[in-house]
Image (cartoon, rainbow, N blue to C red; front, side, top):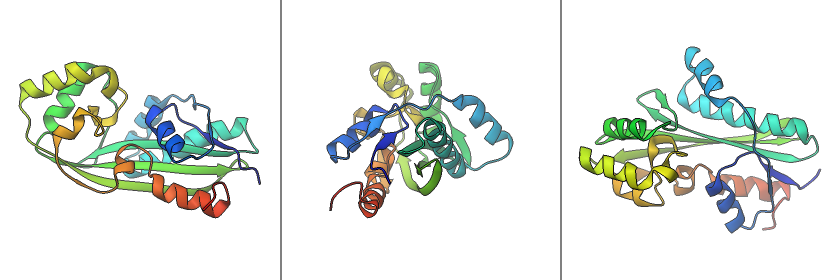
Length: 199
């Protein structure tokens, strides 16, 4: 068994989390048509939780096909608003609209990770966090998006909790790493069991 770990994600924050935890890895971004894949799952009434899991597995499988001897980690995060999956905003106007109807309500974030070894899925985890957003004025939402668009356009829900996005919330029930898109503690436990990292 090889101990080479490949992160099949271009997410800067996921890479930072692994780096700060001193997990050796390299990055190979999975090139997939995510919008079409999501649309197909929505048409089949796949739940947001399972959608995150399927997308993480699909990304890992794509990179594992090119690296059959490596451990490959696929990741995905889906925002679940009352059973409806929300994607990353494609424009500032979309971000303003999304934040407008999320304001004053509670939604779930599902962060999925799937590990492949020798081309096969061997471990998976889906973390769930309940996010309660405080009531927000239309002016604040527009200003928030204008100030932060370049960063939040890559984020489901249109916010970054580790930045000004913390001001949007009154309560968070769950793991902070899961909010950031990588359930780090379960992953570290599994990597330790596999001998990828020392404990």
